[in-house]
Length: 116
Image (cartoon, rainbow, N blue to C red; front, side, top):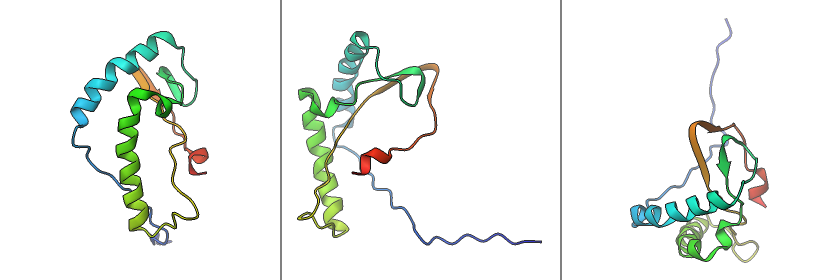
């Protein structure tokens, strides 16, 4: 019988953090996202029976403070892993919201265009 072995040669670190004001941020964004949903049919990407906003939320004023906090953490991570910020600075190039009701879901997908 063939024995199967696992070797982690290329591990993928996942960085995460808890925003101090996560609850208040969520309360602020929920009505904004619902308002966007009412006025926009949304994009058809990986969503099934759900809604996907336009991918420009990072450019809208109400989301800028949130993105500033995210960018701060991203720069901390970049420095931690010795990323050469003189050669390339991480940039948020899109940001979106999803609303999935009953039976709504997002199919398996990747975000290859977000690593430019």
